[in-house]
Length: 465
Image (cartoon, rainbow, N blue to C red; front, top):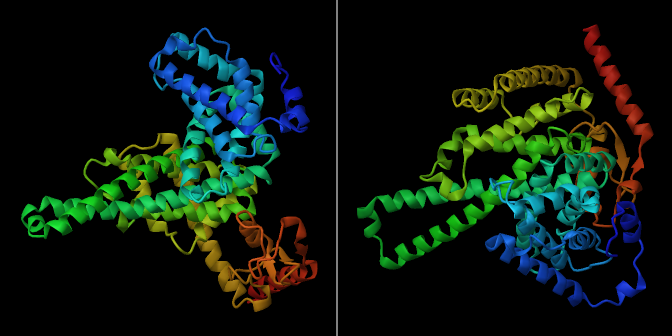
C-alpha cells in the first residue's frame, strides 16, 4: 500500500497472498520493473532526472516482491529488481554532496522496510536463483549473484544493514544462512578453479605469440584458431575472476563478524579445504604458471587475493569458543592440500610485500603455531588409535565416525557431519537417490557409545605402555 512504512505489517502481509494479487498478470509487475530499470539507467547519465521524485513506494515494491517467491514465481523477474537496486547504489567515490547521491544514500540508509528486509531478501534470492528451470541457469546465476554481491558489499558498510545481516545470520545459522554459505563456497570454488586453470593457458598462448618467427611459421588457419581461443579464454578469465573476487571479498568482510555458519561441523571441513586448495595455488610451485603480463587486464591481483584468504583464515580461527579450534583442526587434517611449508611460504610473501598489519602478522603466526601443534597431536592420536574397525569408519570419508546416523532408506550408517554436508546441496540419499532430509536421519546411540568406549580403551592401552 502507498504510504505503508511499518516493516512488521509488510512482513506479515508477505505471508498472506491476497487473492486480488493472484489475479494480477505477471507482465504488470514486469512493466513496472522495466520502467524503474529504464529510469535508473537514464538517471546515471542525467543525475537530476529522479532527484525530485518520491521513490520510497518503489523501494517498498522492489524489496518486498524481490524476496517473495510465492508472490512472484519468476526468478528472472525478481533478479530484474536486483538490477534496479544495483543501478540505484551510489557510485564508488562519488561526492556525497551531489543531490542524486544524497537521495539514493538516504533511501538505502533510512527506508524503514529496506533496512529491515533488504539483506535477508537478497540472500534468499541468491539461494533461489540456483534453480530457475532455464537451460542457461548455470551461467545466469553467476551474473545475478555478482550484482547481489556488489549490493551486499555496499550494504555491509551501512551500520543498520550490517546489524540486520548479523541478526539474520545468527537466527538462521544452522538453517537458511548455512545454505547460503554453502552456495557461496561452491561458487567461489568453481570460479577460482576455472580462473586458475585458464591463466596458464592464456600465459602459454601469449608467450608463443611473442616469438614472432615461430608464430609466423604456423599455418594461417592454426594462427587464427589459436588467436580465437585466446580471445575466448581471456573473456572467460575476466568474467571468472570478476565474479570470484566478489565472492572472496564477501567472505572476507563478513567473517569479521559472522563465523558460526562457517564453523558448523557440516561446513568447517569444506571451507578449510577450499582455503588450503587456493593457498596452494597462490604460494605453491604452481604460482609461477599464474603470472601473466598486464594482470590487471583480467582483474587478477594475486597479492590481494592472498591477503584476503589469509584474513579469512584468521577470522575463522579467532572465535574464543571451541569452534575456532575445530577450524584449525580441519585445516591441519586436510590431506589434499595442507602442508606446514605452504603456510610458512605464505607468511614470507605476506611479510615481504607488507600485506598485513603488525597485529595481523602476529595473529597469523599464532595460527601457524596452532596448526603445527595440531599436526603433532594428530600424529600422536594416529599412533594411539592404530587400525580403526571398519564398522566405526564413515563409508564415504573413511574417517572415524563421531556421531553416527542411519539413512532410513538405504540403511547405511554415516557420520552426521558427512551426510549433512551432502544434504546442503542435494537432499537425496547418496546410495539410492531417494528423498532425504536432516530430520529423517536416525541417531545410532549404541554405535556411538561403542566408538567412545573403544576410543577410551585405546587411550588407556597407550597410557599403560
